[in-house]
Image 1 (cartoon, rainbow, N blue to C red):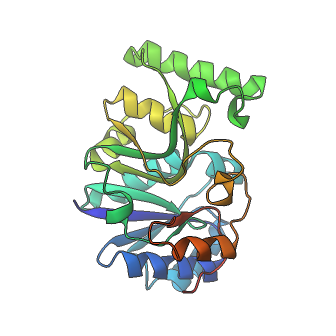
Image 2 (image 1 turned 135 degrees about the vertical axis):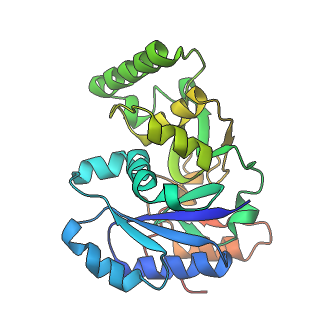
Length: 257
């Protein structure tokens, strides 16, 4: 299986350089492509700073910071349409700059088959919808029902929907090809759209296992999407264990070992 990495970032060139060095160290021979979501006029600075590690840097243009934050899947869609179609790969790994991975992709994602889609914290939506921020407000729930209505009307969707956390997702080339050719409404966000359209297009879903439990205080000490920085001491303790964790999010500092 030929893997590539799509490295999404928007700030802190020094940390990004460190993260890219680690990805290269653990995954020799795996090509890394940059997806820049910061200020457009900063893109050349980042291109120069990160050039030794990236095959290419694609800048998301004419989109608001809010759009870039919630529509990572649509940013990836733009990248595929303009860059990815010309790249040879079987599976793409969507790695954000503050996701620290300290083992090879082959080991961490080996349970996900070539044509499967790996999503972090994969769970039936009904299990969390009353607690999840993204559906806690009426306006957000309205968007979700509009999106569901869209796929039911256009694709005859009748399955049980899933939710996920988007950091660390992986997907096959065939899914991106389908996604790039489809009309994807800008309703909700990537953590609902990607599992939904994976089902629509007939791709099987797998949990990446980077995060093991929703709304759990202990688990949030290893992996969360609530901006709770993972401590360096926690990372060191896990690395000292033979079967300890090797994925941490968010960790927005350089890591040296």
